[in-house]
Amino acid sequence: MLLYLARTTYLCWAHLAQAVREGRNQYQEAFGVPSDELFNAIYRSEGERLLFMRALQDIWSVQGRSVLAAFDLSPFPVICDLGGCSGALAKECVALYPGCQVTVFDVPEVVRMARKHFPSFPEEGRIGFREGDFFRDPLPEADLYVLARVLHDWADEKCAQLLARVHQVCKPGGGILVVESLLDADGRGPLTMQLCSLNMLVQTEGRERTPAQYHALLAEAGFRDVQCQRTGGIYGAILARK
Image (cartoon, rainbow, N blue to C red; front, side, top):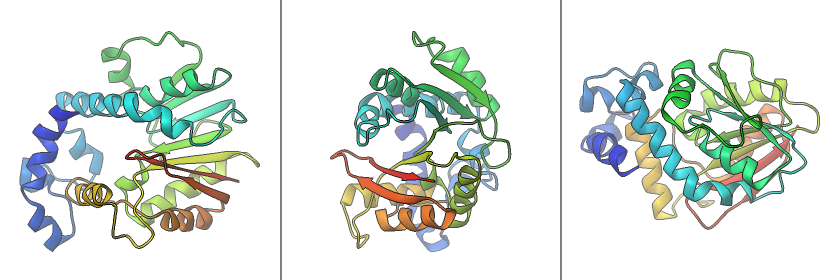
């Protein structure tokens, strides 16, 4: 994670003032890379993609268990981790819930790199990978869909599009678990989450949000019984059902 922050995030933050003035990320200025397709910029080389994946691996090895334990997920035996990268969160999930199976759904180049560079899972058979773009391709069937550090990458319109797709394939009584850094209700804190939101400005198309803002996005997509739990760490968890 520190390598990714030093080699990528820090260089984008050098253009923070311009990002605030223009309201857009700074890949073009920092690296000379256009960001019309966001993840083409984020994954701009194989080495950068691997660095990003290792950063997420570090995050979920520390934070994964707490967000997955924020709610009892045992009623959801089949889980799909959308944008699940290397499978680090999936690994925490099957360790915490021995009765579950997890499909990690991510773009082909990420899935291939996960298989190549990350160690095989002793839970083989309970964790699988499937290639696809969650904005365009059919989503796997599941009882619960996980969106961890996904919605904060996108503006409200793209979030609404993705959540509508998830709601369409979600079974009646099925659920969605959103894992994100959560701002206070007035948006004025905590300071760490405000800094995270500034980081979304310089690196993505999105921002961090309040629980009420996520509730509104989920409700608009058709989800109900929205519950929020703060974990005491960087990430909170929001569970909703169809």
